[in-house]
Amino acid sequence: MRAHGIPDVWPAGKPAATAAAVASGSRSRSTWQSRGGHFGHCHVPGNSHWDPGAIDTDIVPGKATSTPTPSTGGGTSSSGTYVVKKGDTLSSIASAHKTTVAALVKLNSLKDANKLSVGQKLKLSSAAAPKPSAQPLEPFPGAGFFHGGRHSPIVTAMGRRLVAEGCGRYATGPGPNWTNSDKSSYAAWQRKLGYTGAAADGIPGAKSWAALKVPKS
Image (tube, rainbow, N blue to C red; front, side, top):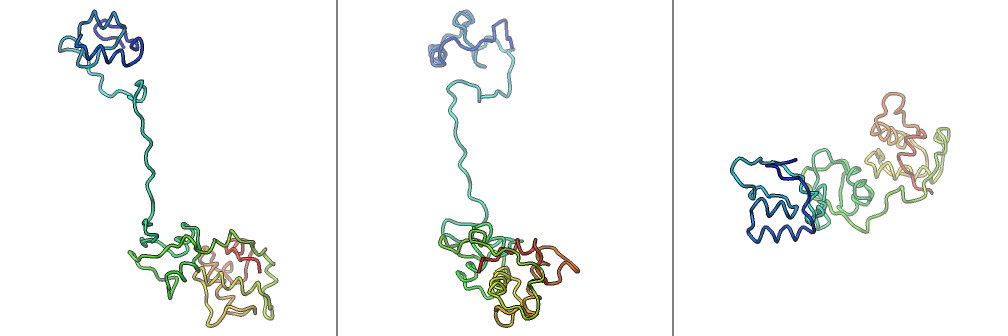
């Protein structure tokens, strides 16, 4: 861009030299032109000079830059608590803070993992139990594994995970024997994952089992 016949060239030498020229009070066109400098908006003689408007100051030499400070998200406070927001579930909170539903239930003495109130404060512990995914997981034993008469610690581990996810439908237990309570609890888990109809029949499938993350017995 050329204004009033002055070449649009970057100031010769370091920015400090140009700044010194400004400080000296010399505003004549010949002086600035001889030094190869820019006119500032206030240094152009006359009243009809062009106002450049927005200038990309990021390209100005010597411009100080700053790094934005990351903000803390969610309802977590520095005191190690979480304030429940609308739409929160204990499972989503546990996942976001790398803990488990069972750990939050125990830490906060919750009677019902499915009942949270907006504004409720939950304690978060840095020493909370690790997520199930950090532990060795039980591989899917196959749908045929789950039938009446089955007695296995895998059934107990599965039941405990279902309770931790808020899907327990047990009057007692869970225990090692496959029962209708296990089936009802697993059906609740399938529905929580979005399965409906025959896909939520309470018999574990490979995908829902992987999502449950049952720790190895």
